[in-house]
Image (cartoon, rainbow, N blue to C red; front, side, top):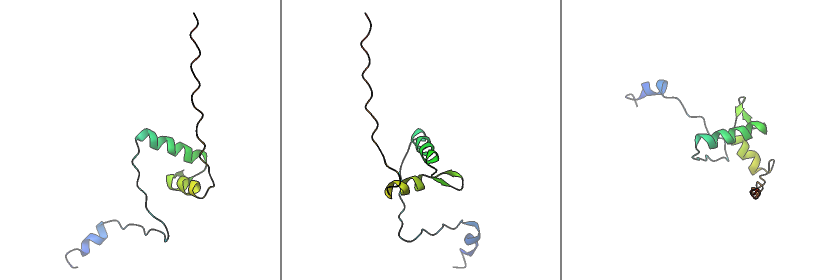
Length: 81
Protein backbone atom coordinates (compact mmCIF):
# COMPACT_ATOMS: atom_id res chain seq x y z
CA UNK A 1 0.00 0.00 0.00
CA UNK A 2 1.63 3.29 -1.09
CA UNK A 3 0.05 5.18 1.82
CA UNK A 4 1.72 2.95 4.44
CA UNK A 5 5.08 2.14 2.81
CA UNK A 6 6.87 4.66 5.01
CA UNK A 7 5.67 2.84 8.15
CA UNK A 8 7.77 -0.24 7.38
CA UNK A 9 10.93 1.76 7.99
CA UNK A 10 9.60 3.16 11.30
CA UNK A 11 7.71 0.22 12.79
CA UNK A 12 9.91 -2.50 14.31
CA UNK A 13 9.32 -5.94 12.86
CA UNK A 14 8.35 -8.74 15.18
CA UNK A 15 10.62 -11.73 15.30
CA UNK A 16 9.08 -14.86 13.89
CA UNK A 17 8.11 -17.40 16.46
CA UNK A 18 9.95 -20.71 16.10
CA UNK A 19 7.79 -23.50 14.72
CA UNK A 20 6.11 -25.67 17.27
CA UNK A 21 6.16 -23.04 20.03
CA UNK A 22 3.47 -20.95 21.69
CA UNK A 23 3.48 -17.57 23.40
CA UNK A 24 2.49 -17.50 27.07
CA UNK A 25 1.52 -14.34 28.91
CA UNK A 26 1.55 -14.03 32.70
CA UNK A 27 0.92 -11.16 35.07
CA UNK A 28 3.43 -10.84 37.88
CA UNK A 29 4.09 -8.26 40.53
CA UNK A 30 7.55 -6.71 40.42
CA UNK A 31 8.48 -8.76 43.52
CA UNK A 32 7.31 -12.01 41.88
CA UNK A 33 9.23 -11.18 38.70
CA UNK A 34 12.37 -10.40 40.68
CA UNK A 35 12.00 -13.69 42.58
CA UNK A 36 11.66 -15.71 39.35
CA UNK A 37 14.56 -13.85 37.76
CA UNK A 38 16.71 -14.82 40.76
CA UNK A 39 15.69 -18.50 40.40
CA UNK A 40 16.45 -18.37 36.66
CA UNK A 41 19.85 -16.84 37.40
CA UNK A 42 20.64 -19.47 40.06
CA UNK A 43 19.93 -22.29 37.60
CA UNK A 44 21.73 -20.72 34.64
CA UNK A 45 18.54 -20.00 32.69
CA UNK A 46 19.93 -17.08 30.72
CA UNK A 47 19.37 -15.37 27.41
CA UNK A 48 21.93 -12.83 26.24
CA UNK A 49 23.47 -12.89 29.73
CA UNK A 50 20.20 -12.01 31.51
CA UNK A 51 17.78 -14.20 33.50
CA UNK A 52 15.28 -15.86 31.14
CA UNK A 53 11.85 -16.92 32.37
CA UNK A 54 11.28 -18.63 29.02
CA UNK A 55 14.35 -20.79 29.55
CA UNK A 56 13.33 -21.50 33.15
CA UNK A 57 9.87 -22.65 32.00
CA UNK A 58 11.33 -24.69 29.15
CA UNK A 59 13.64 -26.55 31.52
CA UNK A 60 10.77 -27.21 33.92
CA UNK A 61 8.58 -28.50 31.08
CA UNK A 62 11.36 -30.79 29.84
CA UNK A 63 11.93 -32.07 33.40
CA UNK A 64 15.48 -30.72 33.50
CA UNK A 65 14.45 -28.84 36.66
CA UNK A 66 11.99 -30.00 39.29
CA UNK A 67 9.68 -28.04 41.58
CA UNK A 68 9.64 -29.31 45.16
CA UNK A 69 7.06 -27.94 47.62
CA UNK A 70 8.47 -25.84 50.42
CA UNK A 71 8.30 -27.26 53.93
CA UNK A 72 5.48 -25.89 56.06
CA UNK A 73 6.58 -23.25 58.53
CA UNK A 74 7.56 -24.51 61.97
CA UNK A 75 5.18 -23.68 64.84
CA UNK A 76 6.23 -20.89 67.17
CA UNK A 77 7.76 -22.14 70.42
CA UNK A 78 5.58 -21.58 73.51
CA UNK A 79 6.20 -18.32 75.28
CA UNK A 80 8.33 -18.57 78.42
CA UNK A 81 6.41 -17.71 81.60
